[in-house]
Image (tube, rainbow, N blue to C red; front, side, top):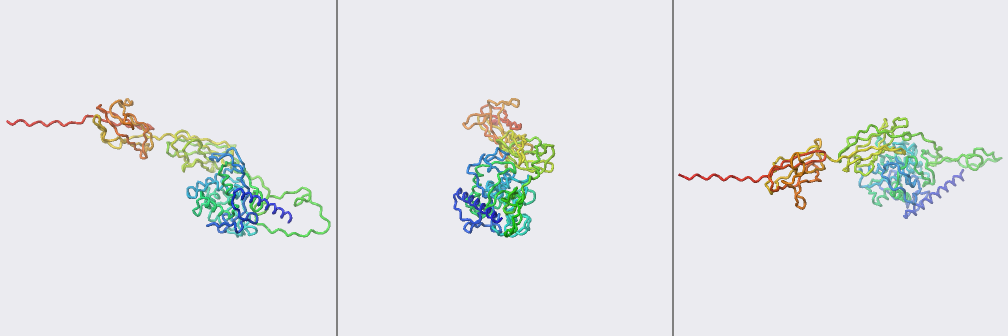
Length: 583
């Protein structure tokens, strides 16, 4: 047993050494000396301000996966997140729920700490190195890992010494701490860095939404700007204080920046090599290791007959392969097929009574999209994540400016999308509902954006509009547009000097406007009300024709106002009668 154990260690060390050399070579950086399978030496340690109480970063410097990204660029190019696409390079694919969590965390940090400039690809790079994207996306619809992901117990035996800080609440170990979850937080760090990323009222390091948001905040502390390489290096090193770790994360960051695509949950590429010499990607929890039994001399006498099922290879008969181990070195049970999740039972999506979706440009839609997840038998399925994506060339978004929203179905199997915010582009908009983590036909909804409109026009003043022949009107016409009593801003309008109330054709005589060249114009198009719904027309002039004339203003939506204009000669005063001659 001792010889076999030694062979396993030597093999692991060799694998790690190859990975370390490859990382250093690919990144063309200075890689300080390392010892004991990738853990830092004193020269490699880079202190980080505000690190975890353990002094070992977010993970306590736990082991990580050393698999390198392929040399070829990812394919296809970055997706808009509108649903699964044809897979390209396998390593470039990120499980749907995991990818959604990274992007949501980036959005949250963009609002909470805009100066940090956190890219979701950094979270993806760290998630790949720490847990192989949650063991290839083995997560439930709410983002919680199907089985806990635990690092080895940090008992000082080849790792850092961090005695229990959470009474085993997160890692199940009341003696020593262990890194927990898809982003591998140790409990002492999670105690202050933990976040609730899926709004379920809990901060769970085993939930990818919570863990990704926590990692984002962790990387954005100390006013670091991750668009600056120096700050980016500091942030990554504060997560795991190893220069090799920094180089590896940077390689994956650049790889994901070149492109990635969404793949179904549970189908991600699993890593194969760890910095401590281990291999595999088991998601089973580890347990504290126990001292191995010392070697004893073999008893004298005839050797026993080989068992038909020896305990280790080489003894003859049928062998039983050893199960894979977790980072702690404890054998885990052979993987079994997990029970189907709610997502697995979804057969199709149905509309859940969505009303007609219509809104004026710039307005919020009064109706919201409702989608129900159902089994093949038509039963509702709760706790399933539905992604609503706005597709096509449109500036319509969900409230908040996002084009993608992910909502979990309730106990009735219904997910209600956020309200839509109409853009300025009019016409039909397609919103597609898909099931996160499954490749199923999407359900399309059509939302219609109409042009801005007014239903009422009124003059802002009541001064009579008069002019002498050949002169100009002293006052300009100003109107206010409203729609259902509210200000109608940005509404298209037309102003025409018409022949009569019954004949809206442009007049060929009487008052007129002037264009930029000073030429006579009696119809103005392309007008729009301002932010207050006001429209102030250019100056009006009169030719030599006297009389009463009409100016008609119309808007999109059918609002109409007719204004009367008068052109008349100036009044002259009569001479006073002369005094009668005196007698």
